[in-house]
Length: 199
Image 1 (cartoon, helix red, strand yellow):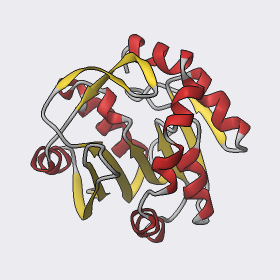
Image 2: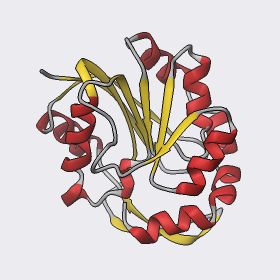
Image 3: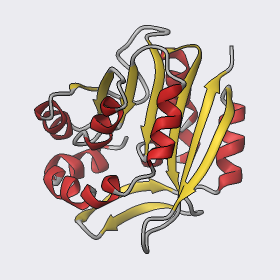
Image 4: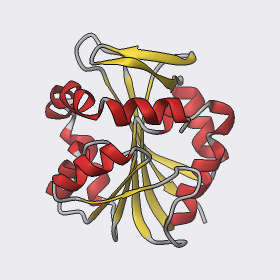
């Protein structure tokens, strides 16, 4: 993630947390439960933010490690009782094969499309053989700095089509197992994939 985006999250972590309460309350349980039933081992939550999705994963009986590039987000998720570390998406601070699953929900959209192969390679590296990867992105075609309603500071967003993401996962060594989309209210459509790391 670029410094401008990280700085925005550090300054407005509580505002972001408040903005996302309703989103996670209405998030489809089917996607989380389908992911959880495939997991063997710990789960790394990349871009965990204040920990709301980490708590949902833990509720499914998963052992979750949260990682975020924002120190303030790490502090907030730690306060939720989640194991939380600060880290760079491009250089994950974990050994090869450390996790049975990786959950990256609307975090890799903060990476420019031209640079997203590196964090995907890192995700594949820290997964066990046949480990499970859940990816959530937002539908669209633009790449830009963007202000959302609850955060009046710009953050970098890369929006994708479903076809783009299918090609991206395949190219970077993942086999798609399941897809569903999710459109909360008047917001953009969210594209949710569960895939398996190919050996």
